Length: 221
Image (cartoon, rainbow, N blue to C red; front, side, top):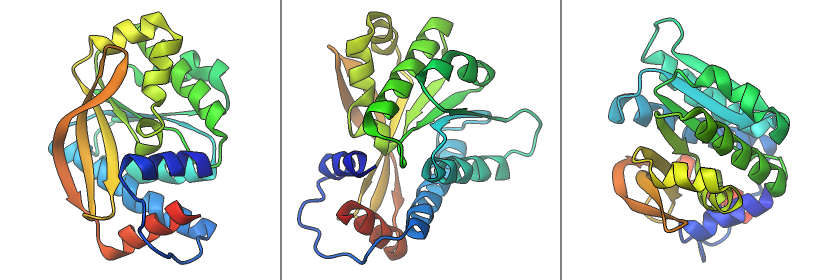
């Protein structure tokens, strides 16, 4: 978890943010509640996603994040069969776990939490491989803990078919957080010449002081 948070901090330019209060596990859950709610709202209201799949590991932090995303999404769509979740214990489960998500308009990759970075990377790579093998055409959205450590880029480097799949995909997004500007941002992203890149911000959300402060505390941990 610490390594993924450091990577996220580097990606949004967090150096020199100053002292922060000690971070409790409860604070970790609060951070994911703020972040997940904002992402769920952006998906439904800004990206017009009506049915959603969430792929994540089984850590308590990722469960909190996934629950917050899901709760906000279903609050705006009370129809049947609008939400599916895949909770992976390891990379070997990816293909079977992802199958129920393939009929959804968008799939969020929400890997991070207490799970070691190398295990998250393996699960992300296996998930992308499953999506590529299935020819999934829907939107794929990366949480900052997936985007910042370049898990998509590493997955493409590991699997040529994943690289081909991602290079031809024009509906990829990523979430980043910038506490200096107090903004959460949804980017349009792409894999270009094997490198993940942002093509620009398509939506911004204000981070209030409580959200910002708990994020800074997480970065300092």
